[in-house]
Length: 255
Image 1 (tube, rainbow, N blue to C red):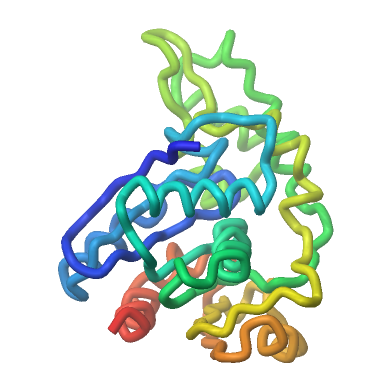
Image 2 (spheres, rainbow, N blue to C red):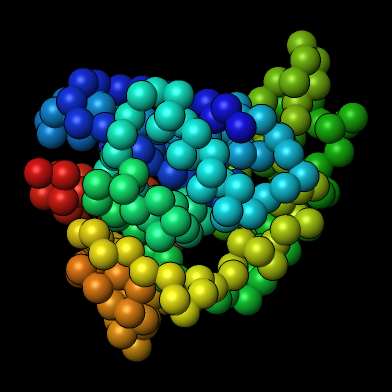
């Protein structure tokens, strides 16, 4: 699958993979800073069924990893530093395990190689309340979402993926049907034998809970050359909640 991307800067190649319901724009501000200050060529990708990339009923980590490898091939990139957040972090881990020669270094933001129970159905249900035959503005969409989703930050995050499908009709950019059909897959664990021996940085939000203290042994089992960095005061969206600290930590990692 041919993935859409936004490419910024010149230098060694760095891929950024967004999380579930995200898109390349989620990392645009930080990507520009890393490109300018760290001398990197940043590739902000839209994963399949998200953003401006193609839709498919298949939504698995194996397929998404293969998409990213195809992207490297299409851009004549032998290997790249890969950064992934949440679902994008699981794609990055899958890619590093299956294609270690293509991943120069790995950074995984607030997700572990363990299994997670399905916990996105409420978000999907809230998005299903939007009737695009009746909604004519982003404000209408926000007002409708607010009835079942009081979290303003979450609504703003989702509404980034709202676009004008035609001159007078709004729609989601992501493939909600495929994502909902594969929600159990989104949280699946890596197999016990999975291992990547390259340099790996895990970053977690102290308030998140996605990576717990007791998970450190699991991180080392799959990624023996890994370190874990905790961003105090941050939840799951570490890059949005603490962008200055994320900028600094990733700059050090890139250098």
